[in-house]
Length: 340
Ligand code: KG4
Ligand code: ZN
Image (cartoon, rainbow, N blue to C red; front, side, top):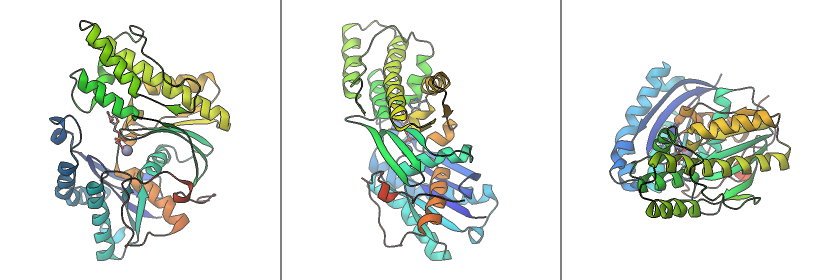
């Protein structure tokens, strides 16, 4: 039995969790800074870093308390070391290293994207590769073919905005506030998703694009200012989801992957979840949709990925730094096999 403390501070969530054997969540505490950033319409990096410094100690203490464990009862401490905001990453990594130095626990530096992949195992430990994972967040949009643990291939990636970024920008334009994804998701329920035919970019190509869609929404609203906002939101969402689902299925087809998995903040979207479940049923595949709390940034996914990484690669050196531009590369992943 191995208990890992996971710390996540790559963006605007200060989060910590205790997870056993990469699968059983004993506690997961997420302190969102949404209120601090909302009036600026997006995350302000310097404000995020300062808030992480203020919150990280309490969030870690609460995660330990909820799990009913002392630091001395843990086996490792993991922190997200990239990709993310430079100053924000430093806070979580420094906290984890300080705990490591003070207690002698091994430190594990975790790739944020890899952690989003491993969130799936928290819900269903029986999940087996190969998987086609749609990773959609505020900073990334990609389909990852996971042939086995540590064997990743990015089958499609966005050429401009991330899907979450498109949601946030369109919501801001429509005056719906920040973060935009949940706001559009809620509003779209009352809208007609067939009201406006917005473009589906790059048909047939193994790539995503959302910049043109955002411009199309802006142009439409300027041309027809009286169009019901719920219809605009629902039609925009349908265009995003169409593109995401089409590329996910095409990549899964090409790779022969029988399981579809969602990860990242946009995976909390109700229409995306509904459509992925539908397409899985229609194509004889299994769909794995982690609950929204595990899709958005959290410490449990860091602890889970940290556990798999620790088993395969051992601890990370304490002089290893952070990398705001860290990519999801096979070299950064885990070797074939994983735990038995
Ligand atoms: O993974 P995440 O929590 O942070 C990043 O690593 O970026 O993703 C945050 C993104 C934001 O752009 C937010 O608007 C979007 O996920 N999001 C959603 C929903 N919930 C969060 N987008 C669409 N529908 C949602 N329900
Ligand atoms: Zn994320």
